[in-house]
Length: 196
Image (cartoon, rainbow, N blue to C red; front, side):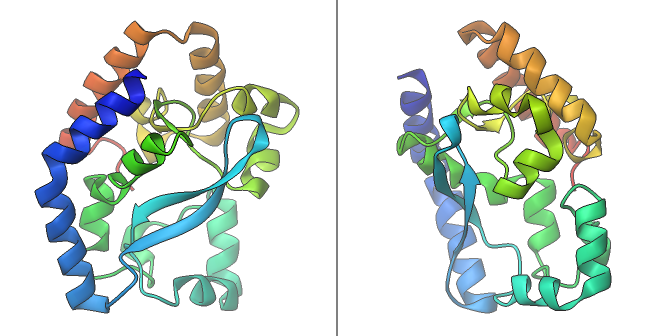
């Protein structure tokens, strides 16, 4: 219940930002406003995550048709350095470094697909590649908008460290830890620590 109430309050407070970002995307690259992708939720249930679109419309085609780019993407933990990513919109890097692109995930929390705090939501292939035999720990929790991984360095932490942090969170999860992570997340976002 805490997650839904918190998310509803946040959505109301940031509604002007949501509107401005939506208008910017439409005027720069048209519709759609949101990037939607299937992610693995609690107990393996798939859901569509919502993010503001930071890339051009044919971004996935560009990635799949460029063997070198795709290889770098996989090797680097399913990420590409924003300074070298040809798929980004002109203001896409800024949206990512400030985490503005992730604000629509509060709607995923309202839809009961995510929590405010939890493991970083992954695609099916990432689940096996990253967690391997420890994927049951990931599957025991709802993914989060933020988590220990977010306040421990964001994209700068290694995959093995991320898994270790998720295990640590699963073992210590409680409302006080969640509030602490939320408060630390605000600080880290403003500092842009480990922003990718």
